[in-house]
Length: 120
Image (cartoon, rainbow, N blue to C red):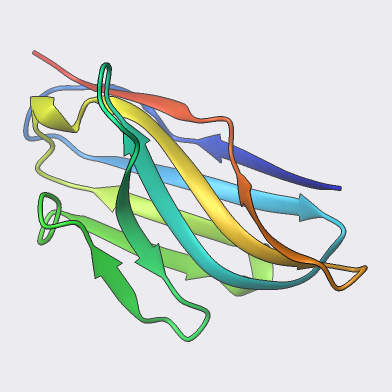
């Protein structure tokens, strides 16, 4: 059993910053890629940023230069630092982590999502 818990969302004014965190716990043997997705009302879920086990990162064009993804392997945690936020960044944000459990199964696990609202 694996659980992912996100935190750090909320309401912020345009131009502001937020830092999202996602902690994985449970029967974890190894963690591979960690990523953040978002889904705005009426839109499909989209990949925001991803970080590999080796530390390589990739970002959606819409957030490049404003968002930074990072990870703490010792704490099984992935972060998303969001700066210069815009109203169009408003969405539910989900972490997804590829995890090998103690039974050697590898699969992607999703968090429940956390709301980020950018508004004045």
